[in-house]
Image 1 (cartoon, rainbow, N blue to C red):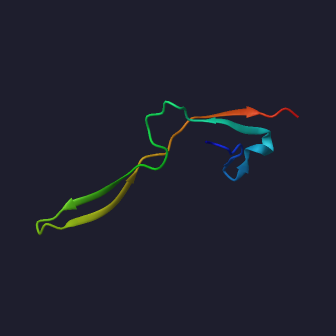
Image 2 (cartoon, rainbow, N blue to C red):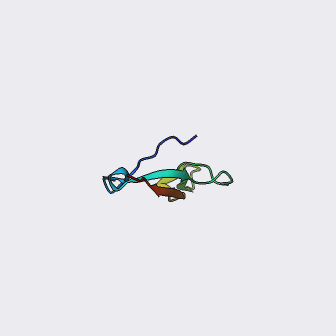
Image 3 (cartoon, one colour):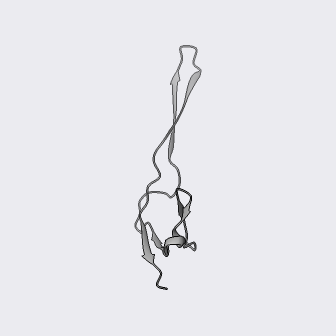
Length: 70
């Protein structure tokens, strides 16, 4: 269950503009929440693997914002 209502973007809190999060993603999302990554490596002639790093997929999700009335 999502319980937070505030977030920051570029170091600025959304609440300073009267915005709050009312929904994140959807119930029918087919993607796990979290960072997806792939290990980049190649096999060498001697049977060992050479590590070249990680490839990260961007973390994308939909949020719905609402403005608080004062």
